[in-house]
Image (cartoon, rainbow, N blue to C red; front, side):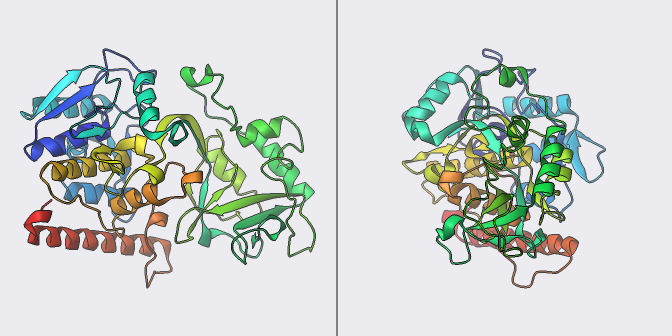
Length: 442
């Protein structure tokens, strides 16, 4: 087991609980990172919240599934919980101490404080080294996966729910009509000159997320991936000649080419999510929602994910992994946590949970589990292993990645509750089927 963050600690626990001896390697404190402050396992380096714990929210549903599957991280979170309304927030120090204590005391887990510099060539291996994977291990991963399948910087564009777009303004079209689909491969949000100028001024005045020292001091951080607010500051028409260029497009409302356009690309197979093309940004999230809703057609947009830019090591999972989290070219090598392209504390821990369960099954000669796509964890693992490899970006738990419901309620709150009922029923049915078959026991 490489790494004792949320995913690594969870995966080690799941393997150990199933009777398998685990060597858990954690490089801290032998080798520090630029973000961690302690040598404790599962240290939360940003927020102390694991997200919503309300069952009809995406995060809360993921929590419910993790509890049903026996998550160590959720048990430790409950033990160190602090008041936070509907969110699952923890005492940061006590949480990490509890995870460290329980993992370290398990009779089947041997903790080694050492840096792993290369992927072991044999035996079951789970890589959960996190977003700040060391240079030596990153080099080993590049050799294993190929240099173009490992990313060191995360430039995430916002994602919106399609049904929240104003389709009286947005129109489908590919530049010069060269798309694969007759209705166009992109949705386009046209802007006239006045709308464009207002948008640019908002970007220039927006409050930014401060870069951490090791990010700000890295000369390559923004190379080839400039945030939209940086481009806006370089000239009044920089965006209109960059990611918002309108060439090859015609606004059906006017019959003319717009002054500028924001293009949205389909982000999932169901066509329920779209990402804003070329809109990587480091603007604070509250500001982002306000500014992005200045875009015609996005006035009432529901954002599944907002943009961000930060140091992050992750692999091209759609190219490399099965939904079981196994490496396609080596079934006894599994990946978990942020390195597979999942976002959020709960998502990281949940993939560690599945990697631990499936790692045990590999050792026992059983078929690894592919969770139903109707479950949140199943949908998340399916998404990160089936997204378009060329445009793959990390994803957090959200209802948009799940299969469409046949009779979807109209009210948003009712939809969440219905999704949760379907997901938990699917998980129970899956587990009942597994328990009925000794070769598939969880």
